[in-house]
Image (cartoon, rainbow, N blue to C red; front, side, top):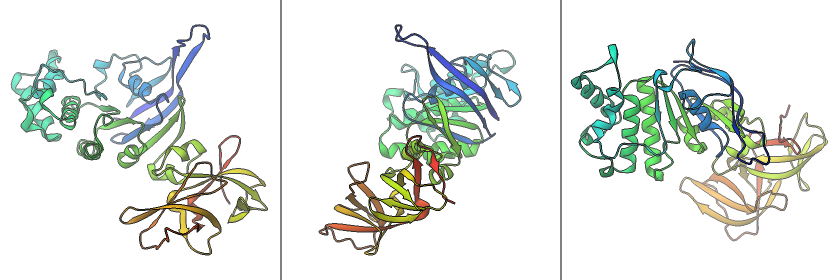
Length: 365
């Protein structure tokens, strides 16, 4: 099911009555979610991603704009008539019901021609349970399950009616690191097997990038960038997107472009063709450093962390915007941990320039 958001805006009354006015949670959001794709809504807390999700499912009504499922305008349609499945952050399972009863609960509300017999509901419950691999837990209560198992029950309950659209609101935030990894792989597997159009809301950029076909990066209710995860990572439109995506985060320096050459301090580190003379913010991805005695960028070495296949070189620079610079290099490189200085050459495609005042990306010719 294709989902189209058309100039979607949501405003709330300002809680500060003295200030008056309204708070804009989502501002003129337009986007088409392709049929059968998994889209990640990504951004910091308060950016409007959950509000967007709640408008799609009908729990909140837009101040203005339209929502279409396929060719149907569902903007004013009640949630129960939209054919959506929703998984919340806190699972929201009924503690007094068994796993099977929790999963079948949405089916019990069907009426008329859609009404099912007990056997049909049981069959659908076991089918949904098999999809998330919890069929052996059907007689347990939620308090007898682990966090990961409870999350699977919530997903099965959302999937049992085979919704047109599946909406996931930070479904992994209550799980530990290992379970998060396992569960997000399960979500991706289920989405691919069923082909259901899915919207996945998260503040964790690693989660969004690992399982999404397309990510939407939001800030203060506005869409910053939309694209395939790797494309957005490699080619961010502004400094916010560049800083938000990436683990470890991008390293930032104060730089200057003079005569189409990029300088960090007095070091001429790269050509900058097509960029006018100006002060710039320089972003260097951690994997953008090449260790070498003839490197143009000289940093003060503070530590070396061995991570198996990679080495993390921790250093400082007087023109860096953070206390430490983290460079990820291949473990085959030998780094003298007792050295005072370390030199790097830079990979041009991993160096990003931004306007000082606006944060807008400056593209090299």
